[in-house]
Image (cartoon, rainbow, N blue to C red; front, side, top):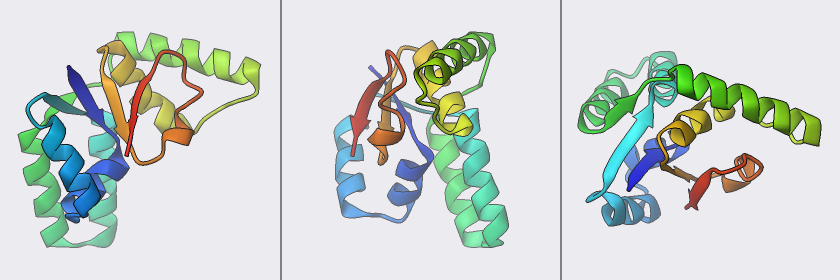
Length: 129
């Protein structure tokens, strides 16, 4: 099984929050990925904070997990999902939709701290912490 981590999960993992660390131990034997969008959000945060220590932690984490790029398949899924959500009047944040689309394109389970932000995305398998 492939697990795709949301930005908020990675941040809490890097801060060693016990609940998140424990759950990550449960899935570490599986394939764990982040999307290139999550990587961008992580780097944005560390460069805004100007913390060299945090930048190092993020860089080390990223080398340990697989990074899956936002590709053509994810772009198509994103467009389809956006249209469906707009018609239903249930739009989600665009970055969240981009991240979820990568997970959908690779048939993964999406791990997040904010399940409610993703529950309207059709077909997305959620593991809410």
